[in-house]
Every structure is written in structure tokens, then in C-alpha cells.
Amino acid sequence: MMLKKSAPGFFDSQAWYRHVPCATPEIQSKKYGASARRFTQLLNVIYQHFESSAPHERPCAPALVLSLVLIVALPVTAFAVSLDAHPELQSFIQAMVTNHGFSERKLNNWFRQTNIQQDIIQAINTPKEALPWYEYRKLFVTKPSANRGQRFWKNNATALSMAQRKYGVDPATIVAIIGVETQYGRNTGRYRVLDALTTLTLKHPPRRKFFRGELEAFLLLTRELQTNPLKLRGSYAGAMGVPQFIPSSYRQYAIDFNGDGRRDILGNVTDSIGSVANFLKAHGWQKDGAVIERLELEEELVVWLEKIKSSPMPPLQYLLGYGILPVQYNDGDPSTALIRLEAESGPLYHLGYNNFYVITRYNRSRNYAMAVFELSEWIRRLYKAR
Image (cartoon, rainbow, N blue to C red; front, side, top):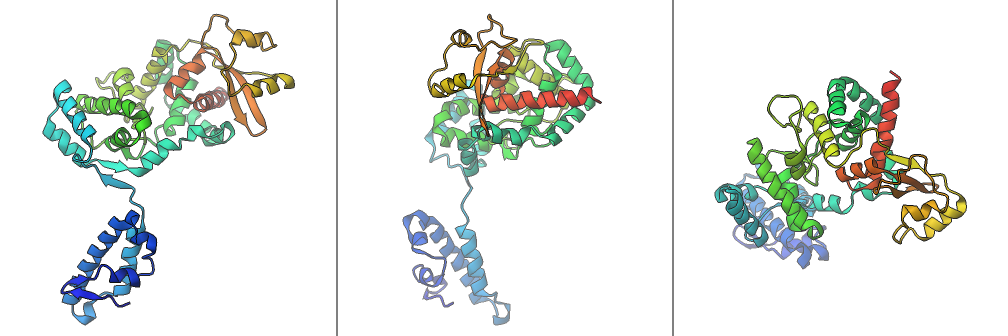
């Protein structure tokens, strides 16, 4: 492959387009202009090295060019934050300085080391909770997870019993939440939390206000924990630790459950167990309360419910007149709701009670709450059968 030399030490930026097979019209377009220019710059470096080397030391130019083509063709998944390009971030920094006494120099330094992660945007736009129930269930309600949950309960029985006594929360539910969230602490997230929250604040308009608040809470949290905000890792949504608390929940609900003077849910299982129980209790968990109940409906009633599924569901009192009468129904429980889930064979209907609603405060998805419930029941059976 011959490359036209236009001036000493430089390649003709037009000539290489014609000689590199991968330089399609799309690459030459405005969309890929930056990549093309970057590739030309790299070619210049190679050329200068090539010219200054002895013939026997020269690398194989076609192989090097092909390697560069492949590198440039790879999609850019992360790029550094530019403060100049994001006035909203500059405004945020000034608010942190004014309202919370942060150092502007430190904040600028942290954010200049922060990356916008494209795969975070992709993940937030395609959450697993959007899957139909029968697919979502396969991810979390599994025999290996139930077996690990039984072992987790056995290994942490003292902390779980203490949480049950203090907060009235069922141990199996605590275990199942930790299992669904992080596989019992095995997978606490791979993204830098500062990257995740900054990306979502700047690049996710539907929930920009929410994530801006979490970014503020995160910086306050790291100051309280006396840790570098660039060091903490978590989920694509900025959740952290064994129980995956977002920063505001960490600050409000994490507790020191082992008495060592620190609220550590990043790696301390006992603190994590107590913090999950505290969270559920604070959101209204009722001791020994029902969670959810399957409804066996006549076919005609199912057809009727399917016709109105896209409309607001009728009040439960109205449905009771059509024969929906669950065994555990409490007329004084305003949070009782009709829950529709997708099975492979068709819709499944349940009645969710107060404690089901409380689980959805941890994650707003009904699929999530149902997975926690089913996994907790499986873990409970295994634990009792030991």
C-alpha cells in the first residue's frame, strides 16, 4: 500500500482515504470526521518513525495501518468531561461551594478526571426491569441463588435475628434483597460512582434533576466518609455496596449495626443487613404482614381485566364485587393493589399488600418486588429444611 507524501514528515490526509479499504464514504462523512482526523495524526507519527528508522528496523506499515484502522473504528464508550462544554456542571460546582463549603479547586480537579460513559446511558434506557416477568424471573429466582441465600442466612444468622427483633423485618426478605442486588455481595458494581452520576446528570434529561440530587448527596457522603469520590464504585445508576444504596439512601438509612462506630455498607455485611432492615422499617414494613397473594380468577374476569389493563385499575372495593376475595385482604390497608405480571402462558394476577409496596420503595419495579418475594420464599424453605 503506497501512501502519497505531500510534505516532509506528513501524509496527504486525502490520499490515505483512497488507499485504506476501511475508509468508506461513511468514515469520510462529518459523522466520523473526528476519527478520520485522529487516524491521520497517528499515521503522521508512524511515518516519522518509519522515515527515521533503518530499513531492517522498519515495522510492517500495512499491518500498522490496519491496526490503527481497527482501533479508530471501535466506538468511543467513554470520554472525559469538559467543564467548558457543560455550564450546568459549572453551576453545580458553584452551588456545592456556596451551599456546602466545598473547595472549588478540588471539585474542578475531580470532575476533570470524570468520564462520560456511553454504556451507562444505554443501561439506564434498557433496564432489566422492563423485561416481561417470565424473563426477568429467570435472572434472579434461580436454584443457585436460593442455595447461596440459604448459606448467607446461615453465615449471618445472628445479625439477621437481631435485625428481625429490632425492626420486625423478615430475615428471608433481607437476604433476598441482598441476593437480587449484588449476589450476596459478590457483585457491587464496576462503574466509578462519580462517572455514573455525572453521566446521568448531564446526559439523561428525563431524570436529570433526580441524579443531580444524588450527585450532590454523593459528594456530601464521601466527605462524611473521608474518602476520595473517584475511588468508589457501584452500579450504572450510582448505587453502592452490598445492599446497593443510592447516595441519598446511604446518608439517610445506612446504620452502624456492628457497633464499630462506622456506617459501612460498602463491605460490611452486618451493617448492610441492619441498613436494609432499617430502610424497610422506615418505609412502613409491617411485622408478620402479608406481601402478595396469587388470585385464581374465572376466565371471564381475566378477559375483562385484560380489556382494562391500559386504563386505571378500578378500586379494589369495586373488584371485590366481581368475586375477587383474597384470604388475607385487610379492608383497612390502602396500599393493597392488583398486580399484573406477564407469564409465558398469559397474564398472572396477584394482590400486593403493604409489604409488597414497601419492597417497591427499594426498587419501583413490580418485577423486582416479585423476584424478591419468590426468592425469599425459596430461601426460607431451604433454610428451614437444613
